[in-house]
Length: 114
Length: 303
Image (cartoon, rainbow over all chains, first blue to last red; front, side, top):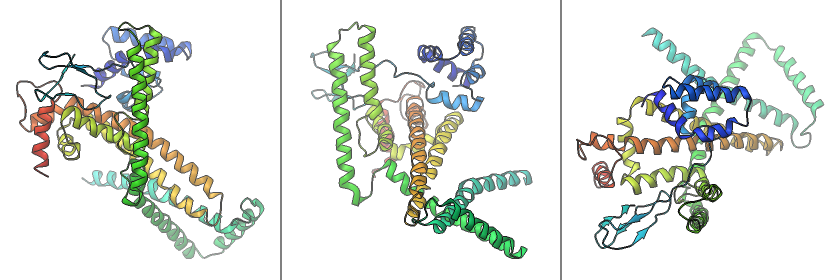
């Protein structure tokens, strides 16, 4: 994935959190974010502008964006639920977060996400 | 080629100065300060000024050859202290990441059990909130669930298995690799690293460099801690350095493990394909558990 695509992906994922964070800052920063959004919609490069928003050079911007946008929230929690692999029974299982996937003891197969 | 070696020499010299000589010289200064003041005159500025003047006069009175020798001795001493401290960095890394050495095993086990129990309690709280909310949730209900989920991941990204927060960040990646991709990272990581694209390697290297630098910073707390035997304010210096290193290491290890998990998600299949495992027509998508287990069998070779 190239740098611009990676930056656009993160921007899209964290856009709402970024808007919330930018509201706490100056009008100039809010305008810059609007400009970034306009550039992103027009499918033009946004990495340099994101660097301006975060007060960082291009390399630092990439590294910062590699893990999360600053001020981003916890995201939206998603519960994983698994069901019988062939639908023969009504058992459902919820593994611990990032834990081992549940097995069907009868078939010896992994249960299906659903 | 000459240019390359010049650049390499410059890089090594910069590294030598920033990692060994500068902090070592600061430490030698602190040793002089500690010996000069001692516990009794810990904050005696007048005494310090007098001794500094006397020392400066003595040095100025030396011949230029003796001054040069003194400078070399200080440089050598600073480098020597730096080397010793860098050697201790492995111990700092082990304390922060675990597993702890055998004499501390009971303490590590107790801390791990406490962290695990707390994590499961937080997971139960999240589950209770999810079960209590209908399928279509209000914004407030979802916010409460998100906060509860965040509390879980803030403690550990997967079920804890180490005595420290930083250790659990790394443990979570190993656990996810094993449980979600069937991959044993202890043996699989080096193979995965060799098939990663340059951009991914650059990000991971930058994150690891930040962590190594934080460990080096934190380790400098140890010699300052030893100085407290003769000058107690060194404890404040040691605490400041140790806390700075620890805070930076937490941030760096969070970045490093986030990137490592992302690497597994995105490039696990690249490793399987490089080893000829899986359907060659399916070039994209995450690594399946079956494929990951076959990779593990191949790289562990029965070990």
